Amino acid sequence: MDTNPILDALADPGWAVFPGFLSADDARALAGECAARWDDGGFHRAGVGRGGSLAIREDIRRDHVLWLDRDHAGPALGRWLDTIDEMRAAMNRGLFLGLQEYEGHFAIYPEGGFYKAHLDRHQNTPHRLVTAILYLNDGWQPGDGGELKLWTTPGQADGPFELVEPRLGTLVVFRAGDFWHEVLPAARTRMSITGWFRN
Image 1 (cartoon, one colour):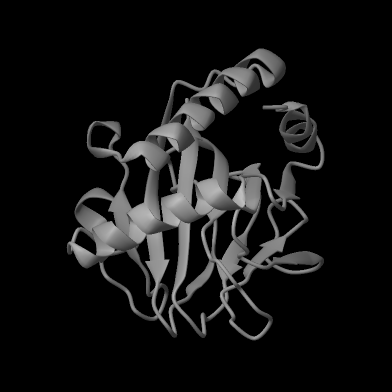
Image 2: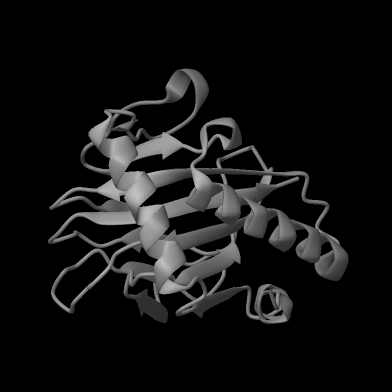
């Protein structure tokens, strides 16, 4: 895996989109594991906040998540977590970020699901340094919704932005504390793996 484009993008401008980062076959296998866990009832409603202030806020986000656990990962997820480990090591070598761990979840946005503009670094908790989102939506078409709106000026939720279609195998990376983003309403079920490299 060539991680140099990821490192270059994180250094400047701090974000990047990589269509076809994961092969269609590998991405479909991940989507299959995600769907199977959904059918098993493993997901729960995503909340806003953390710890004692965690709350379900349907006005802010309407998605469901299942936190990843290597001990219970299927073959496709295991391979993806190996890729994540390679990325973490490369970021530490090339960018000296001191990343110690990765946390992530499968995310499913049902029809009508969205997530209003936000930063991925919780207030007063500086540990999430880099966000990585992998999309698992086979046959995505314009009009299916669910695009990622990523504002490209650090610290601002207005001005120039990038609209990212959640196509199968596309990877998005950005500095978690710098870039505001939102998920636009989905017109069909939308799947991804969203995760964070932490110090």
